[in-house]
Image (tube, rainbow, N blue to C red; front, top):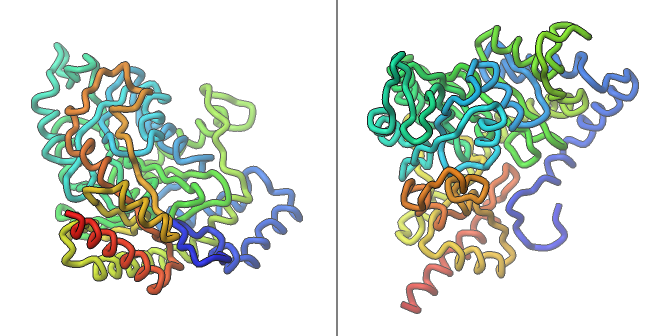
Length: 400
């Protein structure tokens, strides 16, 4: 659906044109029923998304950030508690922690998967914490209780959840998944001896429906999944101004609802998500094949226990900026997710982190480059992308 021969980083036009009749029918349904806030379209989508994720409950909210914030609040994380997460994620992860009244603390990432390092997590719990007089785990840096872990399933691949849950159980911590990039991703749990979907392994999980996600709204949107009925009920109250029923407020809450039209649009797209995810996996495998054997480019690593859904296809290059510039000149779109790790952001300057505190996240932030990835990406487009990469690598080698 693009007039030029450029290859976009993301194509959000084609899928909407392909689904035009189904999507416009959602608007007509809302117009003819005046069902704009709450009602059947919201409930139908929540039930369908819970079924897709293999969870008992799904609660639609107005963004992925609110989904994570409300999940943290509903899971009983208290004001001032320390919540562990990673520094190589979008700031919404730590915003949600802070806005829920908690304090984020970072754990470095695995060199291969780019997700939370189990080794660094265990090291922090053993060496970065003490026990107070009541036996609670306390962060040495913040001198506050450590109560939760928020692993981020980055780029569409789940973190090593068996290992994270083992440590969480050992230290009495709550696990809340940031699954905002992982709709439909799967993890083989050796403990349970079966494949588990993102959003099913923690006490709750947050999903984002930002337009560029694997399941994207036509605007903002998010959802929390959980198998805990009490958590789901609490989130429904939080998103509805703290109402147990209309005009009866058990607590102060938020206006965090997802409108009916967005839920209707998302349900239409949900019917295509499994196929879209399968297409993304096929496109990732094609990238792997086309770039195989090139030591100057590091392709994504997918462990045997993972079925990633490739929200992003992220490679690494020692000259990332040069490669991005070269591809841009060839009409190929790319992205960087994310160029500055959170511990080095101005917003967290007061935490006094050093660049060397999380060396893997810091180093990889200068090497990562996201290539075009969307279900409608063609083999011909991928060949152009990889030809551009290999041409750049060859030019660099010749110049050296």
